[in-house]
Length: 355
Image 1 (cartoon, rainbow, N blue to C red):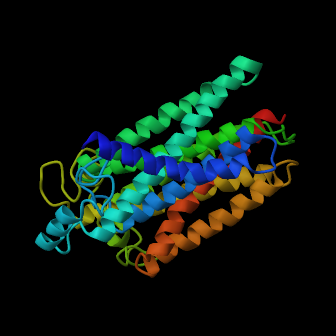
Image 2: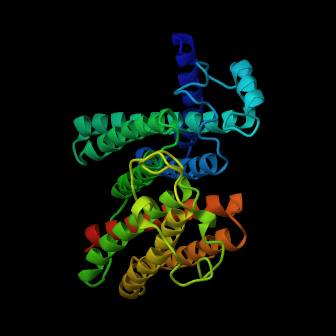
């Protein structure tokens, strides 16, 4: 990729970042750093959802190189190789539409990365000038987004290998959690009264939800959503025939076993069924947490939001099976999972800081 193409690519990322920066700059909120942190967290949530859209539309290899598209900064400039690839394999991963979806995702990611660079720089500048809050959290977010970019590149160069795609998803969720914590730290302390065990329960619930997101990502990246086309049963059985030996072998190509054979259908059933079963664990963990914080001062609003979101996640998850994986519901299910993590971070932060 030429230097000129790289500069044009960077310019597109800067243009994406310019819109939220202008919004923060001209907002009436005097706490600009906090505002920027919340805006960046919101855009990260959007980026997770658009990444889900990219994956679900099979657009992840719309541009099979990285960071550009066939060495160019946009699909229009790469029209000739894209059309050639599309003509050679019309149902393949490369089309003009898929190329644009993939590149918009990359532009968006570069914009978010630039916002995080600005947050890190401002954090250090403010700390040197005024002292106070440590700049290392923002610096950690910057290091995290660099790693996330590396996994984004590996997602393409390793041809959507399931474990890489799943780690990339978890990286996005982790980045969202870091940014929410950073934004919360900039606000006023909200005093709460809740049992001591509520803090431990909130951390446990957060860990359980993250593990469930990993399992959900594994379902999606292995295209195992329709392995159980019925609900609440799976293949008409409570416990269907399954193959766990190949289902959770992490290092293998998409659609293949580690031996290079086509992955058995029973492995896909095992992947889907495990995600469903673990949803029961998630409900139990969140139910226990909500029991302790439902009436706690300072936590009533996030507790009610958690309940609503859990119900919506159940409905969208069930509908994805019953309605055969409609795109809008699948993206909403991914976004709801990320938002669930953000809400649990809010609850955990208030429990730890507001006593």
